[in-house]
Image 1 (tube, rainbow, N blue to C red):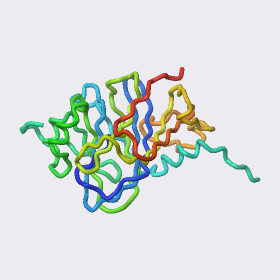
Image 2 (cartoon, helix red, strand yellow):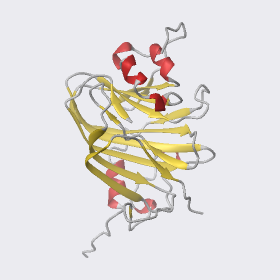
Image 3 (spheres, one colour):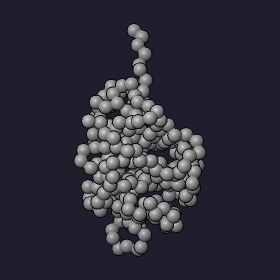
Image 4 (tube, rainbow, N blue to C red):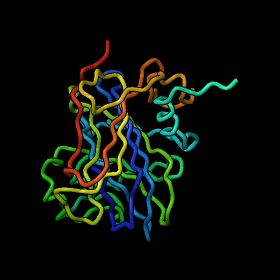
Length: 245
């Protein structure tokens, strides 16, 4: 689910990368093109296990890697050869992660500990009971029209059997059954059945920067890609985890 704390003009070219990490963790990288009249927060509900623990989610700074997704995309081409309730708890900590300020919100009830400008209306959460056990990664975005550099984090996953992509839309404070998708999803480390996902011709180490933080990408694996465009059912996507050996 990608939702914003205020109405925006448009969001396009959303790209999401996900893969399982070590132990019970999942990596997730998110990027998009945004046009907004005011500074807003983007809120990503994430199925985090033991979300109240201090190490439940870790942000990664990809400011130095604005071409993360173009590098992923290049793996698919063979190169041509030419020659909640009121709380007295403290406010949530804010991290500077590249060009963003980011906060980890352990539960819906903890949104009262976040700056009011970057919350959703309470009525929105009441219509989304599926997120009652989720935590949330919140990124504060500046106003104007721009491409945002990739946002990345690693979290302790509730479900080790499905790879999670936050694709549900809330762009105006309302929950709609269908939404306009302009998404490209990427993943690694799974056996993908069917023809929906395409497989890269090259492995990640041939196209990706070698100094990416957080072990986000597996260098020896190929990359799979799924394009989602047009009016589609408005929900998150979870891919069964048929892992590679």
